[in-house]
Amino acid sequence: MDEDGEFVLHGGEPYTGEVVELREDGSVITLYTCTSGYYDGPYRETYPDGGPYKEGVMRMGLSVGLHRRWHPSGRLAREDLFDERGHVARREWDVDGALLVDTFPDTP
Picture (cartoon, rainbow, N blue to C red):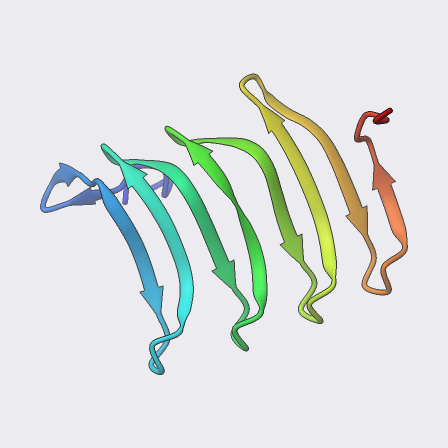
């Protein structure tokens, strides 16, 4: 990876494939999909207990679609929506599940 963590190299060449970090027990800590050195495809990260921390999809290094983060308790903490131009909307909940922020457009 470059110093910013944005470009993945293997053997000095842009990497295509999955980048996986595992715990000693073999469970997944992080999983990122790469194409030509860019994060490109689904990703997920977990807390030390294996519970979900965050997940989403990248396209050539840019966030697209719905990205989610969880509190350590497993309760949803945040949803961010991205389109081809960038960040569109956010929902955020406190640790008890109370909605704090909602900038998602109303749906009919």
